[in-house]
Image: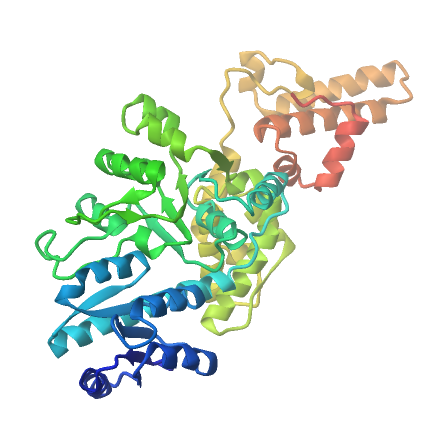
Length: 489
């Protein structure tokens, strides 16, 4: 650990005791006798990992120092030391963003444990900041993704609440991070919590924090996610699974900006932008009585729909290259390349797990593919099996997909592919007898019409998917649709 813990107190004995205890634990430490000395050091030295400050000191107070540090270094945890008679000041310190208070006189072991917790909090914040800096702009060239990019741009200077909808794995947290990164709150924390992943009885404490002794096992005060995200953005993923009682508390925070820690009596102010996300139909959950209608309207100020990967297959080549490079960098190996034919197979795969599933496939290929260029045979077997199954499974709509747009009888349908070839041969024979000089061109046009219309019906109008299934390019199918005057409704 390169950064050190800074101790500031005008009491020599406090500084000496803490410095000796931390040094014994191999924790780097710097000591200061005044807030003014700390402010000077911030101009010259690397920032601290944690700051431990007394409140009452000659000259600049600990509360003023806290304010200055939080302005310059919002992710540095600040522990305030105070006498029991200074609890009012401790409350003010928490409102100013303090991590915890340390009541004097204190035992040295709990004090060191508290500082260790603050160090872990600081390291976690550093890691989240690095991850945010490393995340590239969201990748996507499809029209649906361009709509998302435009929305992020329009919301860049706004603090409005946003609801992101989309299937699991489609990248909702990436959109939330982009909204934060391009907002006025970009230098404050981005804190994410998956409300579906935390046990019901712990979620309230996770969101709002708790006071010491609030419940069995609450041996120390804990800051909740709202407090950790102060001044920044709180991302509430899978909001549709939030328990009813917490929906009420969340509504209160969104309505008046106040909340209480579990077991607390002092109201806390929340200066936080809330971005929520869900894969569920919240309107339907409101009808079912599973989600509060008033909370839904509070969250649904601006809604962004993130398309599933199957609706933007043209982005798969770009995403695949990015994920292969990312996996190679993480594993310290040379990046794999993927052939055009293997890429086409990936573009035809429905990816029920969306972008997350594609990323997992690329990680698997980085580890398991035998050569540097990934071919179709190198793709995961289960992916190839699922793709073959999806191609062979024709939609059953009750109507046949007869060539030349005709409805076939049951007898013709049962007779199989040979029957339409016989019909084609008969049509050719009749045209030859009539001496039609354009027979080749006419029948070729009719044949192409059937192929393209059936492919578009099969893919529900998705041109790129239809082109890939026919073995032609997207530009080719677009040109053919125009040349043949097709109306693929």
